[in-house]
Amino acid sequence: MTIENSLQPTRIRHLVVFVAFLSALLLYLHRFCLSFTQQFIKEDLGISNDQFSWCLSAFFFAYALGQVPSGWMSDRFGARVMLTTYILVWSAFTALIGLSTGFVMLLLTRVGIGLGQAGAYPTSAALVGRWVPFSSRGKANSCVAFGGRLGGFLAPVLTAYLVVFFVPADSETVGISEQDILDPKILCQDFTDALNSTPSGVRHLDEQTAAQHHVRASLYSRLGDAARRDIHDISARDKPTRPPTELIAALQKLQVVSELVTTDELTLLPLQREARSLADLSVRSPEQTNRLNRLILEATFPKSIRKLYVHGWRPVMFVYGSAGLFVAAVFWICFRERPADHPWCNDAERELIVAGRPDTSAKAAGGGVPIMAMVSSRSLWLMCVNQFGGNVGWVFLLTWLPRYLLEVHSVPFVERSWMAAIPLGVGWIGILMGGWLTDRITGRYGLRWRTAPIVIGRYAAALAYLSCLFVPNAWVATAAFALIAFTNDMGNPSSWSYKQDVGGRHVGAIHGWANMWGNFGAAVSPLFLQAVIKNFGWNAAFLAGAAAFVIAGTAALGVDARIPIVRDED
Image (cartoon, rainbow, N blue to C red):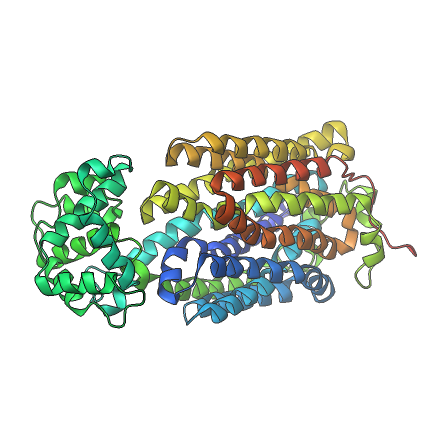
């Protein structure tokens, strides 16, 4: 190497940020893939919305409780060893989701993932603090946070396509069997109700529901006498004592009919994208006809016939778990604790990294977790309140949004995955803009206004939630949720920068402390919003989300990055 070249800083800091970005991508992909398969998991395992809300919350409770201990372990034992371990642990539990047999096992795997992921962001915050110059921290933090949002964006879309992929066209599970009847009582009642509903009697229903009624009545007219006896016998009983054997046999015969419904009914039924593609074929094989009719029957009887794609969600979890091995290996190879330890980093880069750091970055002492300093910091408590309220509102996008799109707008699975992904994709822009804005505001107005992007974003997100009260269709709703994601994510780089500014060598523990309270908010969100939705409806949930963001934004007004967090004896 020449003297001239040795004076040029190497760019290993960029590689370190990229590896942190990659781990954040995996973090969110594993964290939220469950939400987008919830329809199939609930059917497969026989669990309710209330039970599923506990599975969603269990992750965040475990994640919150593990924040400070895992952040301290990273400070104590090093980011390289601990983040590699964290990735392997949470990936193993993600794979184990695919082996779940019921509510308890699903709940325990989510607890395991939460504990494994708890140290990821505190560790990443600490390594960015050690590897990135002060003037670029906002942008570096936005890059890592961007990785998380990219993983969140990929989670619904990639999960949807993988689920469909793992139920191939030649699958033996296409034919309806006794196991595919979720509730014989509801199935038979649907047939009975359709007979009592004339075209004039269903005009007050939406087009999709009216189409379902018409198809049910049409199918009933094509059933044999034995199947009709099943329907009337089971409908008349409070608790059916036997499966509708004859009705199942009749449905199996209908499944091979070349034209099961009319073209108009195909247009109105809430069909999966695959069904519409099959319906557009001028010539179909018997296997394609069988699969199309299975999907039509699912759309006609959504509460009583098991979804074909139920058979695809378990292999997806195995694939995601395996991906963690790759990311853990990349992190171990590319990362070192400090620039001075990395063989690929030269002296010029090391000097560049430490240049320009403010005094607040060096005032913390080593040793254990500075508990007294943290609990006595007014600014840190306000940051905790901000993160708690922000997560109550934001987590809706990753837990109940897919269900909202299904129950309120009847959006099919693949389309639903794209609508759920779009807000997180728009959030990328908010994160990147927030990183730039954090550095720009700090450079012009000083550390006191380091957190201004958080305040602006929280209040704007509250207004966006209020707009959800007036959405006429699924796409307008998607736009409103995208605005929530954009404005919320705009404050993320500012939040990370604040903790790095005041944390010194305790960045991991302090980041973990604030994240703990933020994730208590995330843990409360699914349970709280499920109760609101169940008792008061979706609009009440939107009002609750807006109120949470107002509280978060108001708390952020009092956060002051000029005040370092130190122990009394320092």
